[in-house]
Length: 117
Image 1 (cartoon, rainbow, N blue to C red):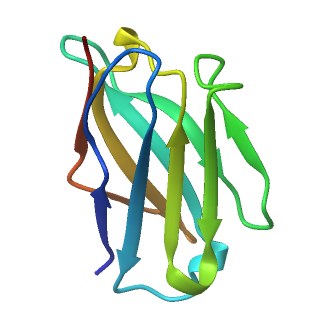
Image 2 (image 1 turned 180 degrees about the horizontal axis):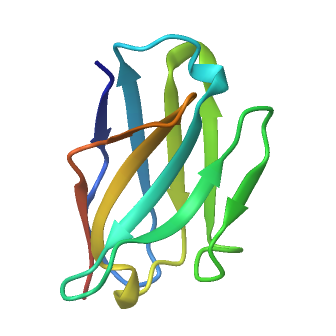
C-alpha cells in the first residue's frame, strides 16, 4: 500500500513563497510513477497544478507556469513544489497524487495553503 505524505503548507502573504513536499512510502520503482500536484479551493473542483512524468518531463497548469516549479528526487521518493509570487487565488488544499503502472492511483491527505494579508 502506497502512502503519500505532504508537508510545507501554511499562511503566506501575497507575493510570498512556499515550498511543498510529498514523500512516498510503501511502493517500488518510484522513478516509474507519474507524480502530480493538485489543489482544491473551497467550492471548486480539484484541479491539476503540475505533473512530473517518468523520465523527467514536467507540465504545468497555465495558472502555475512561471511561478511554480515541480521537481522530483527519485532516490528519496519525494516530489517538491516550489511556489513563488503567490496570489490569493492560490489559496487551496494542495494534494499529492501518484499514478503507478498499471493504473493504480493514490492521494495524500492534503496540505492547506492560505495566501492572505
